[in-house]
Image (cartoon, rainbow, N blue to C red):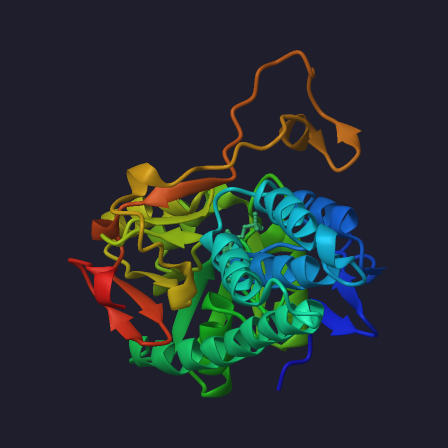
Length: 337
Ligand code: MRU
């Protein structure tokens, strides 16, 4: 049962939990406006690779509501391009937009195009709910004892249409008695761990603490981490996986400490056009996100900042990649997945 609905389509509008406010405020953005939804994606009011795709799919469908026949193609293309420009790394965004594009191209003369696009958006959303459950089932196989687990960023119900990827593996394993404790990296600079993962873990009654990202090494050295599991934003055919900045650090640390490092993601996160991680476009974020913490300036805005939102973990550092199709191990070849 899904308890958190990060994005809901109701009354011809999107209801989006504003993730920039959590966990202190639980506010909902209610809109059917393409520009407002695009800004919500850019500002990470809604975020997480699968959820970005789902949100964009609804937004693109809504953009075609009440558009005259002669303007449909122009509005579709402009809306597609606006949404595609929001965040470059999560391939789920482009997967979802392209699924709607196929529907548009096959039915561009239909009077019913809004409903056809909307049905596709709903299908992508419902599929993701099932993918999340299957990932959790498959992921259970990595547990052979009760574990202390470390995770990074947020990969739960706030990041997907369903109950999550990596965090759903943790949730399912906890329900089956295989999770002792969860360490949540705070995940600088936007704190998806200390704000969002913590909020979800609290709701799930899973024992946890959060830590600064740089504390992960010490936790491993102290023998407190049995395994690390994270999500991904784009996976190349050779298993190289882009995920929130700091994920690569964890994989390197795991190798040193001989700790298994897992990624959990739906097959919609595999980019069939991407042979290796070198081809993955990494989003660079505004320096304000680092020179400020929230609204508080902590250093001079004159200083240059390098702030990639994601890094790429080489496939050979990943013990296994868990998808809805199974548990995949190196050497990876995702051409047929
Ligand atoms: O910048 P974000 O918060 O959208 O980044 C999210 C992540 O890196 C997640 O780990 C990834 O999207 C997988 S979510 C199931």
